[in-house]
Image (tube, rainbow, N blue to C red; front, side):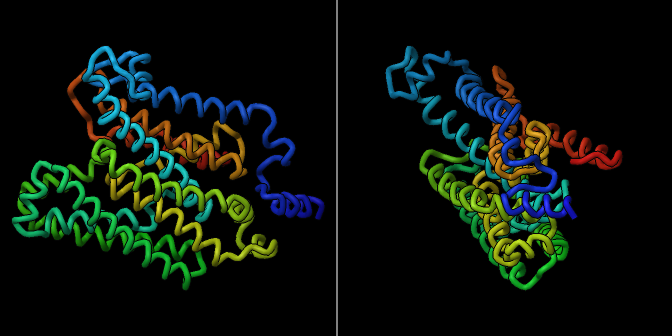
Amino acid sequence: MPQLARVLTLARAGDSPRAAAPSQQFAGAKPLALLGLALLLAALMLASLALGSAAIPLEQIITALLHGVTENSAWSNIVLKFRLPKAATALLAGMALGVSGLLMQTYFRNPLAEPFVLGVSSGAGLGAALVVLGAGGGTGALLAGLGLAGDLLLIAAAGLGAAATMTLVLLVALRVGSPVTLLILGLMFGYFVSAIVSLLLYFAAPERIQAYIHWTFGSFSGVTGTQLPILALIVAAGLLLAAALVKPLNALLLGEPYARSLGLRPTRTRIAIVTSTALLVSAVTAFCGPIAFIGIAAPHISRALLGSADHRLLLPGACMSGGCIALGAALIAELPGNALVLPLNVVTALMGAPVVMLVLLRQARGMPT
């Protein structure tokens, strides 16, 4: 009974039973870990602006950002028109996927849950496939080479597909009380949509198949300066909604019966979690393509660094961890100093797969994840 009383007290305070007391949560190494993540994020952001096919000195980057005159006139254009939008896109996408992965792992109480389990990414993929693979010759010519008009059309189609999926998932979440049932329905919807995309691929012309495959590789370089505010606005809305869910998420670690006894409304919380995840994932998928593994890896890296299950710590930790992974993957994909550009999803898989394997090994040994 004393242990149960302590658990209930922690839950009312917004902590999980595996977390330390509030007075101890922010003591010791945890603030240092968050500060270290912030410094690493800033360093990777600067590296993204400095490194590439042409290396630019740090002081010249600062001059360009302040709209001053650089030693080489081309450097200012490279930083402001190409590298800054790409780095900002990677940062936003990493933050969105890291937080949405944390929401899914907490909601489904499964350390291997990831942002795309609700099928939102599959819906975005179907929207893109319908444009790239199923349209007439006029659209095929429009998308040739993935020019600006083709990119805008592709983003709009993927966004509409993701929005339709989000609406469907929200309607299902209103009627389904079990997270496991919602998870299975999301996976089944993903399989169903993948089958439709496979049919479109089977009957499509080779050049359109190539365009769709290029989209599935994922990229942070397709977002322009005019599109970036839209992506930032949607991601900010999803992150703010996730921040408002800190206490409900901590309560859900105790299970829905305990959470309900503490006054939590599971249906309202479920809708808010699904809405936040769908906003974050649909925005990233529509603008950048289906970026894999960041959503699985970032929450586990955050837990390992912070040693806590308290979402007051995990939320900013997963946010910064996701940003670091995305910026690091973008740097590795471009191989600074080399004209070769690797597919982004190849790099994120190489970075994220070891994290998933480590989680499975820790589970097999009975260690907490």
